[in-house]
View 1 (tube, rainbow, N blue to C red):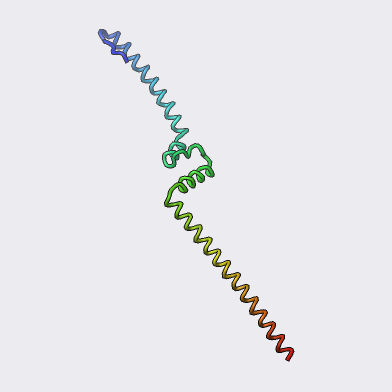
View 2: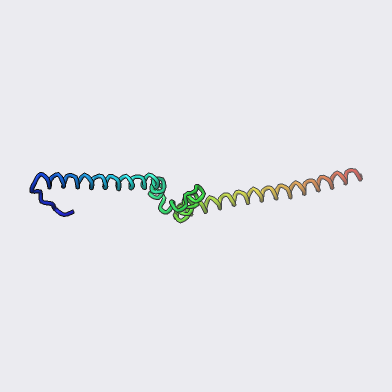
Length: 122
């Protein structure tokens, strides 16, 4: 902005008018910028918390992004892996116990059937 030398009342009035016009123009620009920020506030806030999440604005995209960030974390990855392994071991043990019980019950039924058949023959 160039400096203006004020030498008379007339030049002072012109400078005041010029500065008022400039003020109105700057207020208009500021209003436009505020409108822009109002429209993008949600994306900006989300992007602050989860970088890059504004690209995927849907809930599914956001959940996927959170899962991706969490999976890249070493602690979460080891926690998830150990939890999955524990669940699989539990399911395997339960399945094994059920299979063993089924086998044992089948054998005991066969023994009982054989014993009752022998008793009836006698």
